[in-house]
Amino acid sequence: QVQLVESGGGLVQTGGSLRLSCAASGRTFSGAMGWFRQAPGKDREFVAAITWNGATTDYADSVKGRFTVSRDNAKNTMYLQMNSLKPEDTAEYYCAQRVGAFIAPQTYAYQYWGQGTQVTVSS
Image 1 (cartoon, rainbow, N blue to C red):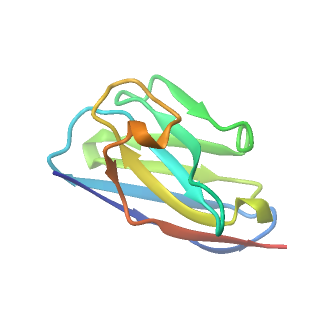
Image 2 (image 1 turned 60 degrees about the vertical axis):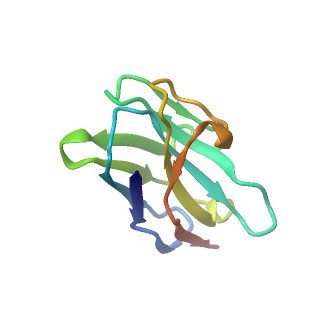
C-alpha cells in the first residue's frame, strides 16, 4: 500500500507563488505521479504529471508556463511549483501515483491518492 501526503497549500494573492509537496511512504514503486485539482462544483482535473525518472512531464494547457512538476526520488517526494497564480487556480490539489510507468492525464489511470491540500488565490 502506498500513502501519499500533500502539503504546502494556503492562501496567496493573485500573481503569487506556492510550492506543493507530495510525500510518499509505504510500498513505494517506480510509477508515474501526477497532480490534479478540484474546485467546488467541478470535476477533478489534470494539472501535471511526471515519470519516475523525471525525464518526461506533461501539463494542462491552463498551467503551462506557470507550473513546474518535479520529484526527488531519494526523498520519495514530488513537488509542484506554482507561479503567477490566478483566482481560477483556487482548488483542492491532490497528488496521485499510478502503477504504470507512463504519465497519463486521466484520473482513472491512478491507483493511489492523497487527501488533498487547499490552494486559495485571492483577487
